[in-house]
Image 1 (cartoon, rainbow, N blue to C red):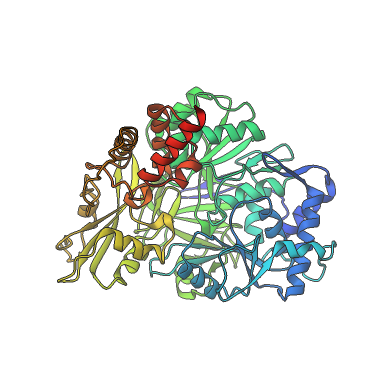
Image 2 (spheres, rainbow, N blue to C red):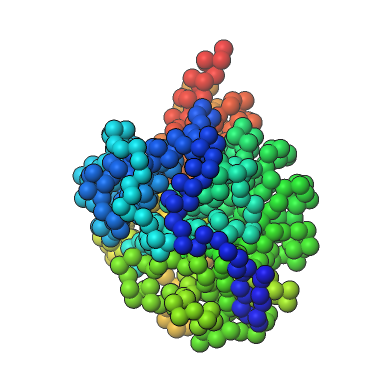
Length: 609
């Protein structure tokens, strides 16, 4: 049962496999139902027996390559049918996996490899872009000749390291969160917030570097269920709904932003869908209410949790009554977890008062890799638990307990923010900008427009320098992943200061510019009537989606002028409606300039004549 004591709450504590490892539990499921489907896509199915065999071979191959117990192994993090076997293979070899996204800048990949002391990277193809980095590439294809039996020498204890995932760091370096097997097992094997079992089909559409994938993969595989893997990334809500229908998905996690678009775009839920989990940012009460009114048969669960507490810490199944007041509660601790609202002295506040939300229980991570001081600051002894080794994680979030015992999220108490589901430290972006020779000062803030969060960088150039936005953006791309690139970069003479002499970021956040600064000259549209008409139509659609006043240049990249994958959804919808074509999200990811897109549309129309 859930226990509520003033500003403390403890999730249910029932027996579960607390001392088991991820790979041990998977092997048990494979032995129980070897012919059951573990992984399914549009054109393939892999049984539990096949996945057990594949992962055993990978584990033996890694062992023969020199991987030792306790080592960190990089894994090419692109979603594919090979990924679950790769993760299991790493774990069965006694190692921990570290997601390495091929889309990350080489400088960031090199930093992660060095920090985690990665000696080997498991890749799926020769073309994997890790050549030249300080680690040996091990190819999955080479594991076919390895032994079929599971390595017996390295049985993982529950406290062994399972994975390291990197989040944005305020010092300018990403932080490696070290998660143990027990944290993952507690997330999915003692789950009281969602029904997980052999009938569960969970859609895996989150990047491996985003810890929602922990729930998507292991929530299915450790319960005898099925991981549903669509053929490509789902960027549009209609494609998402179609994939759910096609693959018989029962359970899906959506970031807050994607949930909003899903509710706006979908008129009817696929018949198989039984549960939608959403979280990551402040939930829209309007969209939660609309979902509940339109789809009453589907369960809606609002979840909350930092990476440092293994994906989810609290959860609440929503009902219409919950969202009338506007602040959608984040609920109570999930099983084998705890939550506390504490004051500046780390003492519980009175019921109804706000304070810092601290979370504990079996999901608390080991700490930050190679950052003992930061770990000591954020991971503190849990004196409320009655167990000597228990720890709490200080989330930096403000919250309060309502009279009914439900938690309400009240925002960040520090500068860390979430943008489209990704955790971002503005200080890391500022540190990257500061390395540009023409940048004197930089401040990065989050502004809101139309209910969406945007990163805006305000830059004061070195006297006598005139950096342009494209040059600064190119500089940032060399060290930061795409989700951390500012939507806008504003050049200014000075940064506003508050009464204490510090930069007034609140004022900056209120100064969201109406258009992207440092614009190039207005585009010269083509003389050909057909091309010119398409160029003008596409430019107008881009302008509306990006919130800019002037037409973008014909050769400007959509993502370089403030675009992102979510804005691409509205662009795609409007393009298809106004141009009379059928463009997929993949088409728009490949045709990222107006000139390329016009040529593509003309070719597509010609092929239909």
